[in-house]
Image 1 (cartoon, helix red, strand yellow):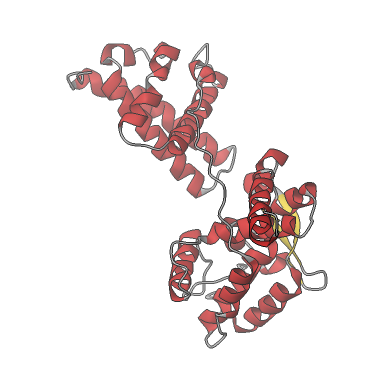
Image 2 (cartoon, helix red, strand yellow; image 1 turned 180 degrees about the vertical axis):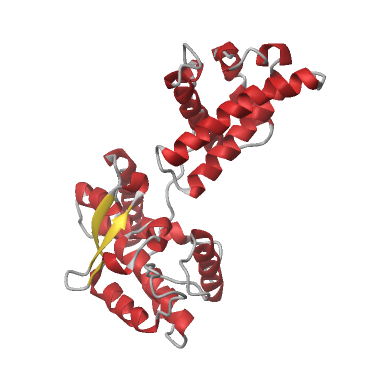
Length: 313
């Protein structure tokens, strides 16, 4: 489809949409108290949709505002996203952002009907998590010797990731006040700001105790448990970078990521007989269906063990 001629009218048309999008992002920030990372993702998704509008919908129609868009327009959005090379997973996220945006417009009375409600996500390829084996995890952790402050911090974070099955965002969000040394538990804030008490085991708590003796915050009122070299809270990106370095040193480059420790935690619990509901609670999953993927991983590992070990296999 040819692009419409860009002129003063087209800029006025798209500004109507841009204003609506800014209002939506402000709503997420003030009313829903979304994190900066979430706001950034929504902004990027809406920017993509804005590009689609300028390329695929006439400027004359855009000038009439959001109410003019219908399901026929939006059904072209998925194939358009695919055409620019995005994966099915990324397309699904961008469509979810679009549904949220149009729900906001409907609640604000800016549209009468929500055309995005009928949008369907593209079929997702099934991808099972790839956990590390118990010996791989233990060997990797034991290979990080506490010969520097940074090494103590890194070992402590990885022991905590694996010991509690935490998301990286949950790890970097931990504060000193969240520690319970007596019970060997942490107060963890997961997705949707849902809180849970998470056992991490004595090994992780011993490392946390050691780390707190080295911890040197930039300011006395810095609450974060894990700090960067500047003495302030770490980011998820910085955790990913240091883990890549540690994995490369251990010869596991490309075989694992920060989330691999969470996958391994869940799989090892199920391998050792933990029930699915308990694992769901430990992981902080809202839905049991999210946790059930690990049963497939565990069964796969059991089948492999059978093939290797059984004399009649």
